[in-house]
Amino acid sequence: MMIVMRHDATPDEVQRVLQRVQALGFTPHLSHGEERVVIGVIGEARRADPGAFVHLPGVARVVPISRPYKLSSREFHPDDSVVEVGGVRFGGGEDIVIIAGPCSVESRSQMLEIAHAVKEAGAHMLRGGAFKPRTSPYSFQGLGEEGLRYLAEAREATGLPVVTEVMAVDQLDLVAEYADMFQIGARNMQNFALLKAVGKRRKPVLLKRGMSATLSEFLLAAEYILAGGNQQVVLCERGIRTFEPSTRNTTDINAIPVLKASTHLPVLIDPSHSTGHWAYVTPIARAGIAAGADGVIVEVHPRPEEALSDGAQSLKPERFAQLVREIKAIAAVVRQAAVSAMPGGNHGSAPGV
Image 1 (cartoon, helix red, strand yellow):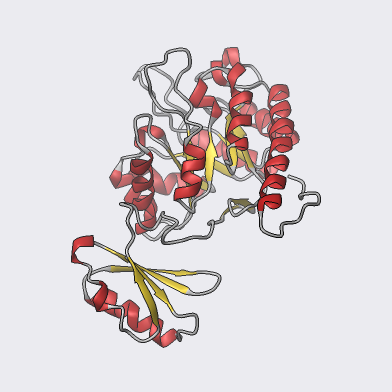
Image 2: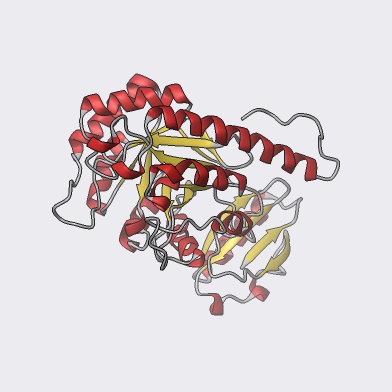
């Protein structure tokens, strides 16, 4: 449930409500909205009695949250959340965020070459896998800490913040030394021990949807992180497994507007993993931005035919530069339409992307 405080509630009244929530065995989550304070009551819903809070001083009303996910729901947090990573801001109507880089960090020279190329093309963040969850145990598994060092060096050379995947709880300390943002990959979306562990950290998390996960399951995975106290979560739609074999996965474009309506968390689209073929990456990136995504994460490699993983879905730098130009143009149109649709909205030019 959600306790909405009066707009003139005092700090002491808020504190007494927090204490009451804890005394009844629940976990309170405090959210400061634009107009008033909201306290989420987290715990076994059947045990929560609204009457225990509704008459407390400073309380305006008690609202049940109907969805199984609470902290990630717009019912609890109506305003868009903004997640900041090294000066890059996701969500909240900010400019779209473009993350790019290779599937796997293969060498120092490869990483530096790609980092400079994507920075020049307009990327805001750098991606690259140092630890790789692979379907086959015989496939390239990543360079580990050596790869993390190359990512950090590329960040120093370009100024691009780094996101990289963490696969296990015992990797967290090491990855945290080098990365600006943890990525939880599709295969680990329901690795609950890992979700709980990153929830205790104060480093932003990019959470990818599992290939067979419903959107409710996806948001419940995010809930684990939020419930641990880490509010810096960005969601990523990366395609789901269906009966259709013509692409690697089926891009769920529907997920973008559904998630934007259901949650306050920023939402990205991954057109590389969702299609598995470079020729489809740009069209799907365009579609995702048109559907309202807050950004994209794209795989880029100067020589895809030599890539140690996912070369078939990697864009060459010149194709990536074209993608950036196209999705920025689409984002500007989407923003203009959103401004025009507002009551009394500004019908002039929208800000550039």
